[in-house]
Amino acid sequence: MSSDIAIKVVNLGKCYQIYENPRDRLKQMLMQGRRNYFREFWALHDVSFEVRKGETVGLVGKNGAGKSTLLQIVCGTLAPSAGSVEVCGRIGALLELGSGFNPEFTGRENVYLNGALLGLAKEEVDQRFDRIVDFSGVGNFIDQPVKTYSSGMVVRLAFAVQAQSDPDVLIVDEALAVGDAKFQTKCFAHLRALKQRGTSILLVSHATEQIATHCDRAVFLNNGRMVTSGKPRDVINTYLDYMFGVERVGDQASLILDASDKITTSDEILSMSEDLFHSHQTYNQHEYRWGDGIARILDYSLVVGSNINPSTIDVGDQVRLRVSIAFSLEVVRPILGFTIKTKEGITLYNTNSELQSFSEINAASRQGDVLGISFSFRALLAPGEYFISVGVASRRPDGTVVPHDRRYDSIQLAVVSSKPTEFTGFFDLGVRMTPDFHQNLLAVGRTEGGGNEVV
Image (cartoon, rainbow, N blue to C red; front, top):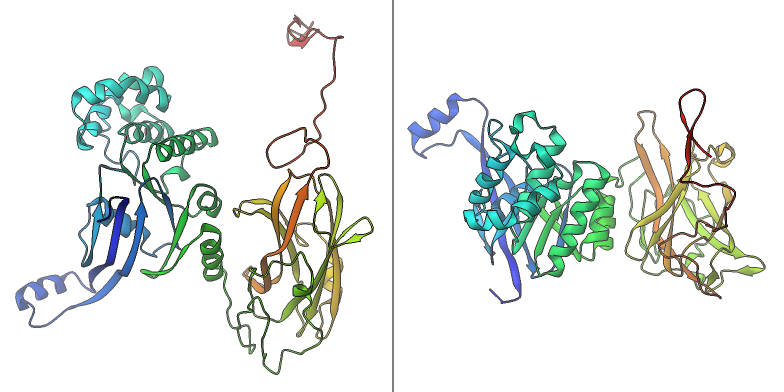
């Protein structure tokens, strides 16, 4: 294996034997392979990818896609049925935090027990012990039996032990979905520190924002097979396509709309208007577009003052996003939405007509209608490159959302500043500092009722 590769997965497969009845296991043993009483289920099939040293790779996929099975094979707790896995260096695994703790032991005893299971000598645990306790935040409870801990305390202590083992490869399987916001922030800060020291991280999360924020690459698994791998934003878009993808709606044929919109539709889809998205300078030709085509978003404009579709806008500009939608069939209660994301794929803002209680859209959703709607907002964003996504969908009586036309990252939004900005981050909250000499905020008196008040 190359010196810069931490994990190498080659044609990996895992097959389970599924028996309909418990007695079939006995029959299978007695027949000694002359007849099979089971059916095969391949949890993984022909999966191949690599993780480089110091790289963070995210795994996405719906429940049952094979993600946890893959991680268990990488960790060595599960044997593959086909293919191979090579791992370079010490592995730390955050699979089921706290599952290895003995509830009768104290926190201190469990730290040494888990350290030994991780291959750490007692002297190494001694050196790390204060850091482990400090990171976990359990304080004086470290000498109390773990059975008296809350679930959050157990998780924090288990993570602290694993994190302080200084692994070369760290495996994380939804472990950071538990705990409070402060704990999760602390965990991700530590993951970034590990990455800077050269630790390779394989992260499984259903939170696509975590994948977009913390990963260099992503891998999408579906039904045990690898669908695609690459940049997190591209992989997440494909994953969302599968999760909320196109289905047959009545007798309407499903279709995927590509970015160039060179589509010959069925007879039910009427050619009413030309798609003019691509004609604007702020259009992103690498948009990700999909839907069943019953309603289609055909044009847009960004209006800033007297400028239409300017190449840049200034921080704080008032912007009006205008879109037009054509309906080839009647759509009951259509939902139009828009999203602003960073170029890394982090969602900054999202809203739609349903959240806004914008009922006017319901009156113009008949076959042959073309509807124009505007979103108005102030661009209180830090200077940088952003993408706007727009989409139209509807909701079935059972609550299922049916996507008709979703154009992800279809509009480029370049925000600049003509003067030095007064903030860092994503948004300008308009904070202003003023002197306040009329109150001594440190002087606290007692009210007649016994409460505290600032005087």
